[in-house]
Image (tube, rainbow, N blue to C red):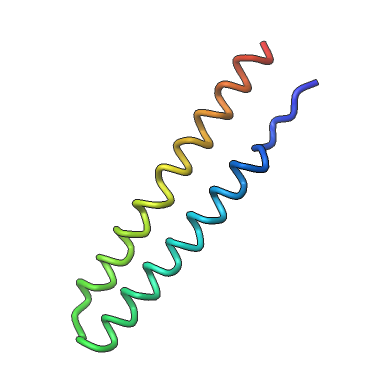
Length: 71
């Protein structure tokens, strides 16, 4: 029987990506509150996606590999 859940390393990587994404968003909101320009919020969101999207892609690839290995 295979375990379909991500490994501990993948969970740690996703948690790290989520924390970094939140920090980027908070930095964008802080810059927005100081300048009044909404561009900082967009920059924070885009910077955060740079951490979370690669982690999600790796998670999906790992799940596919586990699925193929179980067949």
